[in-house]
Structures are given as structure tokens and as C-alpha cells.
Length: 113
Image (cartoon, rainbow, N blue to C red; front, side):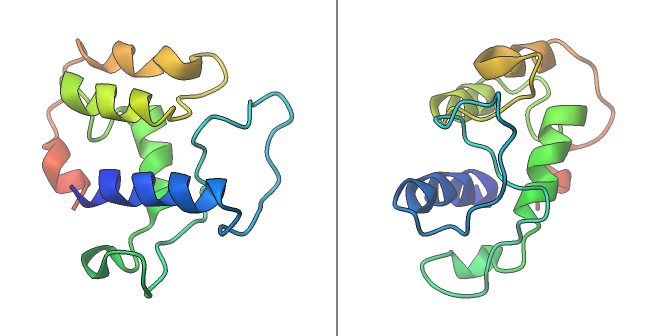
């Protein structure tokens, strides 16, 4: 899945200091994976070509706020939690669990393409 692939690469590049730093909220621990809302996957290597131009920051915001991509998807929640995905200030690292029992009429796969 291109979103998880990009999040994994973002975390790796960020840990190497290769992602332009943005101001982080002071109470958010550095080990959290927090993609700035305005981050768009660059159209260059090492980013996967099929994801060039993907509004990754917006996708992350929708994952946090609406559960896009993770509603009733324990495997995806687990993958994001392994990356230490930032679910929001009030949820910490365990925020994905709230989406596992929610009902949602939208097709999560289409939202993430």
C-alpha cells in the first residue's frame, strides 16, 4: 500500500534528518511519526513513483480525524502503531483502536488511492 510505504520512508528519512523540519507541538514526543499536514510526496527518488504528488499530510489528518484507511482494519492500525503514528494529543500511540469498531459507509481503499 502506497500510504504505508510512504509513511515508512518518511519516518526513515526524518530520522536521518532528510525531511525539512517543521515546528512540532512542544508536547508531542519526537519519537511519534507526525507528518506535517501540508506535506506532499516529492516527485523524485527515493519516493515511490506511484506515490509522487500524494498529499500524505492530508491523508494522515484524515486517518486521525475520520478513520480513513483504518476503520475496521486491525492490520492497518497495527502497522501504523508500529510506526508510532501520531493519532492526536488525546489518543497518543493507542488512538487507532477507536476505529476498529466504528461503522463507516465509505470504501476506505478508495480514499487512500
